[in-house]
Image (cartoon, rainbow, N blue to C red; front, side, top):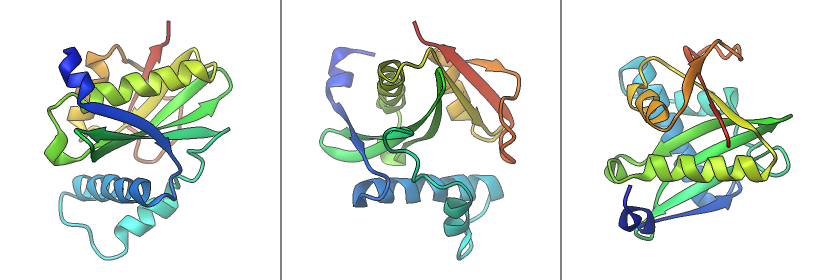
Length: 164
């Protein structure tokens, strides 16, 4: 990624209940529901998914939520949950109109930096088979598939990256 691409992006922490963060989390969950069911979300499905998998722990000291802006416009997010010695990556999302501009890579780099700063020596994540773009992003950035470390009902692939 060129410096110019990185310069177009800005990352900052936010609380999940702040309006901009809540908007991005709503969009993330909407996309997860739509892609999983392969149809438009039905009334109440997004709310149910958000209740089933809350984001309120993405705050210090348990975690962090990072918001991305591209050319000053709200563009995406990524979260970390801190575990003893490692961090779990979650809620990686870039708005469709901002995809293909390096945002995923910038969010991963910021999450990795935050994990290192919190004392983590690795990042783990789980994802679904239908999220092929996400799996490709992780693989491009050094994440390797590992055996299951979680029991999430939607998890089908588990990844890890050692932080140097």
